[in-house]
Length: 129
Image (tube, rainbow, N blue to C red; front, side, top):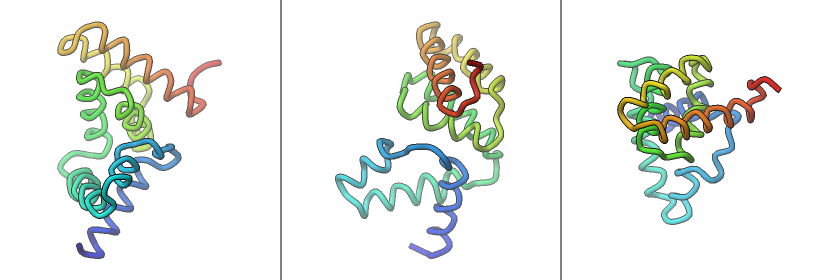
């Protein structure tokens, strides 16, 4: 594992998840089972895939929000809505992506996605009181 890949992984993770409690996220869980494998998985996801420059970080995170909404994966959706905001996606863009998933996942997953978006925005102090 090269130092360049380690640094790219760290920088990308910092960009996406700064200010986000990831103590119960995937990486923390993976580490509980196998620290070395967790590191390798993280290097692939964060250091290789998420750091690619074909899509902007904003575009990439909006794609992730869409996929996780349709798959109804609330815990990961929470992290990636935070990440989308961290890389410049607006509240309106995030909501629009979730609304679009009505067509692909149905109203229940869209509603759950919007609930999670509201929760994240509240956590960030970005939801009207």
